[in-house]
Image (cartoon, rainbow, N blue to C red; front, side):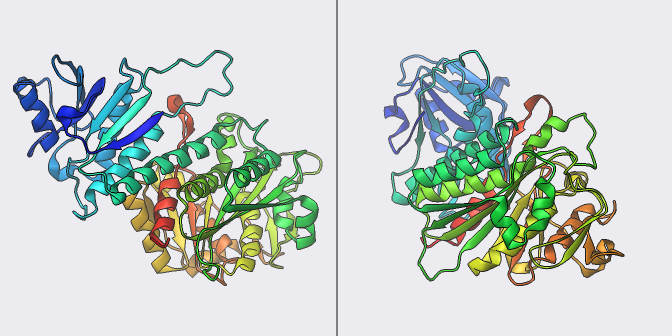
Length: 497
């Protein structure tokens, strides 16, 4: 797909279809008024008759004659006072949904002069261009790798997005949005790949491939023998029942100054989770291929950094394993010694994510990190608490937590902070080891983070529980690509401009 940015006027912008916005109330954007004048007031007439409502996401395709665009797609953008960046993105998504499989081979989008709430005026157009770029890539995504028939060929080949000027700032914003969308789609590809293909060694191969494609990324893969030597026994306890060996994947992106401390991302990479001996119910177990969503998001973020040559140092560590039941599998009641030297009584083998993460969180101390952020589809309790709209956020540092929350708001990829109070730690008390790996049903998301916090005392750390946001169930089943936008916004906010 060819994406371009243009500062040409509407009258000179040639395309098979032109997309413009109409609000539910408030002033019409200048581009829409210009189109209405060119059409002798047709849009106003249709608005008055009720054919164009302006309701957010409502679309109407209008054939026109005598213009450089034979079709006009009008998308409603809702009331001015309710047009948050999130609602604006919904309108863009609705418009792209209408055009992606239509008859137009070249579509021009004129939506950047539609105002959004909460924007700094100096950055508002740049923010909208970034959202448009990301949404284009998201909405045009398909995953047909394992279907035997040939995928349908789209007529749409080119999208031109109109901007007020072709400045470096606006171009960079649009390109970052496109790169973020591509990073999300890389994450979705990894998540949607079936578990008989996507196992720990295959994930390691994807990291090596990423390093070959980008000189700024260096990859190292640790095998089980090396992990055993390091004392990563909790991670190895998870993979013990599987024929697929575990891998610790380390990717280093060095785009900043040599002396700058790296920002460290740690991803849970359980490529399939049966629950182990604590076997999960069979219904819906196929979705446990998405239990590597944290690692997939880390991959997506690293690709965005490399594509945009971001001036920041980032280290990604992925703890990849498969959790299976067998005669060699870890049993409930087993006690293992983590890399940190702390002992863990494993009462439930389905609470395996924290076991692979705790050794990875100990391992990353060697990088002298600026901050550490781990991402994991960790607890079903997070879905009960927050549903599928927000990721759960817990942290030992208020400033880091607030920055991540702000990034989630800007990127329309929200998180919500939960407490990490000492009062919850007692739920992990064990009669036989330093701690047990579950804290009971109450506050399950919090006690899981409490477990991880015992391995992160030497640096600033945040945990993102993405169990409710990493994938969609039902008819729209598939990886969501979240929280790549949140991660990219946060990392870019700390990159040298």
